[in-house]
Image (tube, rainbow, N blue to C red; front, top):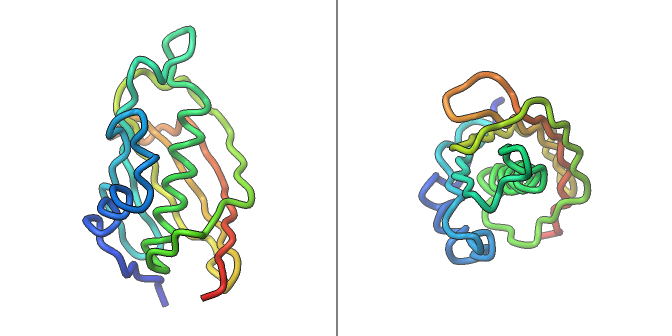
Length: 143
């Protein structure tokens, strides 16, 4: 049976505003754009300060996008559990993304009572070519 989200895109964006507002320290660059059975998608609008020499979006920026998207994907399916935390995130940088909108779609691979494992794919907006791929494990606090 597919895992259905219990929070909407609007709920998730509101959560980012109210409970995780530090994600907007660089301005409003993160936005949840979709959620569905076992997944969520976020958009990142990087700025000049998110570039590294050579004009590519920096690795730490891509890492943050993967991590925030994994967190939002988990919350979409378990509810607003603010204290769910990353226990591991592994990322592979595959292509040089240009300055411009990026999207990250994250799928839940396993959702247990205490741990969740997720798969994140980052691409330039409206492109199928991956610029990075990550897997994340999150610890879920007891209810």
